[in-house]
Image (cartoon, rainbow, N blue to C red; front, side, top):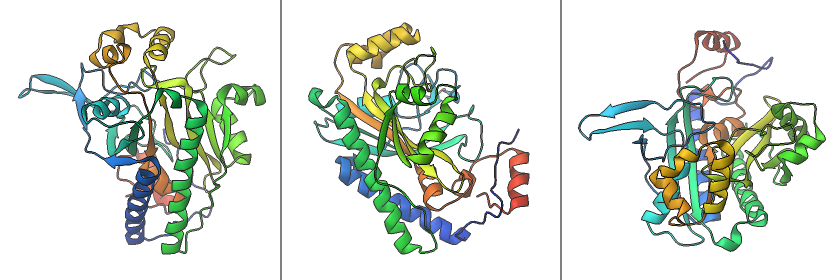
Length: 335
């Protein structure tokens, strides 16, 4: 069933040709700004990994990866959900040192995603990861990194509007930091998505922290795999989307697990069987660098800055017949 919402009177501000130019402009400008702000170098990344490597992102633990056999190699492979674990292994392999890191274009297929205005089965994002010291595994360092990313986003938005004056997306550089537990205290009778809406409606740029651990109601605010983010040192960057009138997640990120937090989170999530996978053994034996990292949605960022109402206006994907019908009736152009 389609979950597409088109506001009354909506009309894209750019033509097809201008849209493609703007997408190119945003991607080139932002990745340069991000790399400079966080001291990152671009690397190439895999589209798929071996299914027994433990390197695929398990997301909420229920999503099915697209898998296939490779007779010529003698392995079964999975299309990545994200590169959260692969990046950390790459930092060790490529001998990155403290304070420096990598970014890459990550393309994924999430077959079980429920498509709507902001979700697609095709995912494109900048995945980034950097080596940090033990001393920087703290909330203050996390917040400073979030502010640097938000500044890069706002710089890109301002530069885009110089190039395309018909665009006027307004973004706020001032970040409001709040934990999921504090958000639950503010809105105990609301669902997690409703809480985000109420808070971000007022605090237009928000970093929602500590996602994955259980709250007072016995449930986490949202699902988070237990083996990459430290649930006490992670979060989502949420921006207010004026066109859709909703909180709009642009990035999931965090300081990654060390041996101690990995062991605790595997236990809490009932995933102790993962201890036998190579990646997890290396983590538990302190053989991987301490890192932080995240993903920043490319199509999401383009959609927001170009003031589009549907993610299909900025990326090519597959949509159900009802979504296609609604968009055609409302004059929304799906690529």
